[in-house]
Image (cartoon, rainbow, N blue to C red; front, side):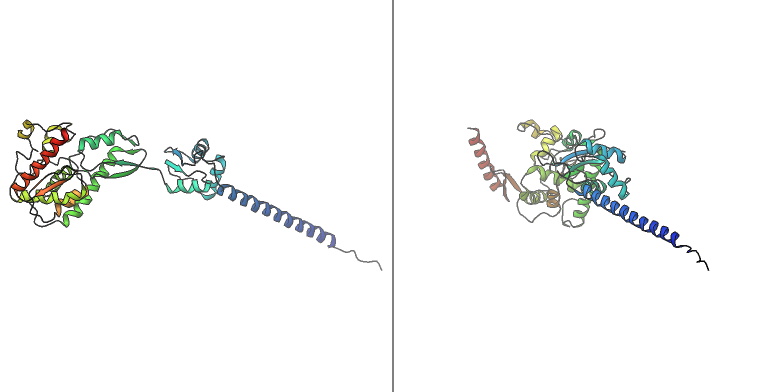
Amino acid sequence: MSEKPKRGRGGFRIFLTFLVTAIVLAVAIAGAGLAGYAWFNNKIAENGPQTPDNQPRIVVLERGSHLGRIADTLEAEGAVTDARFFEWAVRIDGGENALKAGEYAFPSGASINDLYRQIREGRVLQHPVTIPEGWPSVMVADIINEADVLSGDPVEPPAEGSILPETYMVQRGTDRAELLDKMRAAQDRLLADLWAARDPDLPFETQEEAIILASVVEKETGIAAERPHVAGVFVNRLKRGMKLESDPTIIYGVTQGRPLGRGIRRSEIDAVTDWNTYQITGLPKTPIANPGADAIRAVLNPPETDDLFFVADGTGGHVFASSYRDHQRNVARWRQIERERRR
């Protein structure tokens, strides 16, 4: 009797060989993929180019720039050695539409991951625009219009006393009018808070009057510790119906707050203006400057004092007196100091 043919064994061997080959190939491909992925992750995490002086690298990413243009800009500015790696990193993360324009200060040697994170979070470079306390609005406008980090049309001087002097941090390209609005809003918030906690026995009734008096206090002394005492003197004089007799109010009527550049003339002391408190009783018509937060606090909660007078003491500060006789002696000492300095 003849043997039956052995069916299927050869086919099974072929199938088994194919399966083993496929598995080996898949493992090899997967291994290569994992190795490639690990290599790429290491590449975008490694330190980038160093700056010669190890200082931050300043790069401006223009508004409306797409991913490719941003990557090219980073390469052109030396932040990355190859724009393609930055672009691939962003695409893998799906962050094409999350990148923010602006001026950046990238640390020397920042990795692609570091750059991407900073741009995605919009951590742009901030620039200070400083408005000194006690500056008049015409000079505030000068600062804003001359700041090269700002953009937009020149601004007109704001209403006197309407902005809060301080240092404002802005990014390059901030609109001038936008910054001015921010300064006004800062003063509105501060005044609202301080007004609610004011002394109930003040000789004025409105927030505008508070700013007027604070501007006079601000211009009378550059020493922060003296402002409450000066405010107390002026509050006492207002309560008694005495003239404030503040030299800066004379100057404002002449120059609108810009430095006079010389001594005050007798004719200017005698001139009747809306601000000259040697000639008018009560407060000037408007503020004479933009007072800082400390001056506003001082006039809204002045310390108790009997003093009605003060004069320069020759050291940059003032000496105070409650009687006119004592004040005259203090004035005589100041005149003597002035004479000795002119020798």
